[in-house]
Length: 221
Image 1 (cartoon, rainbow, N blue to C red):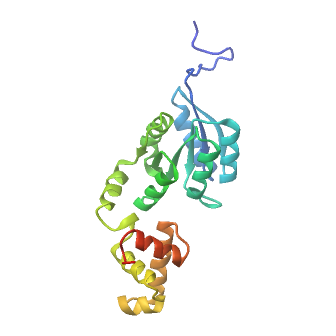
Image 2 (cartoon, rainbow, N blue to C red):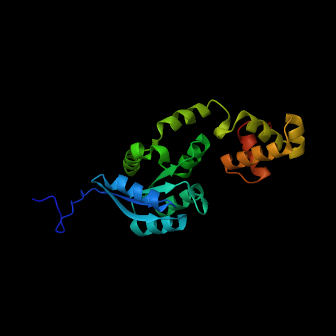
Image 3 (tube, one colour):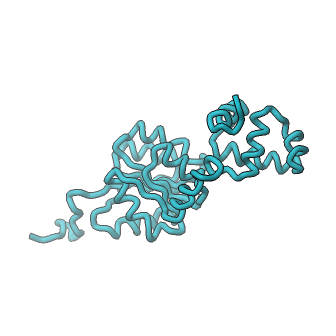
């Protein structure tokens, strides 16, 4: 029996892995499609240029895997991962990004993503990550995996030692000016550290930072 369809195209295996690609750059999407569809058992069923489109196509096509760029026009895609997982629990998510900070990996996996692939390694890793995600397994860029493991023995959630010092003082109620004076930093530097802390932890208020510091034994209750 012929392995081609009536229009001459190669038949895809019955167990095809159906994929939606979400990235705001058309050139990147085209490259990802070509990379994935070079595999006979992969089929890209839709491409989205923003988070809203990704969610719409996931609901409409029920793909096995969503390849999701971390930085989209609306901001970080991490906030949308739990909602997508709720809307389409049978769709696994593989995050594709330039961000190589362990904190982002922990946030992505904690939100429900099964894969985390760096864009500069996509040619070598994305196919395996999608296959694993479709099978319900986790894939993590090996270089990042080692760094994530190392973080467990250092400051929490990828915070630097200095950021931990700033966080402790924030939680104790000190102003940016007071923290700057205690740590011999400029106020602007303290503000930058504070912004990085809030971004890494995904926390926007002082009360949330205090709760985090208490939960992680950074200050006594």
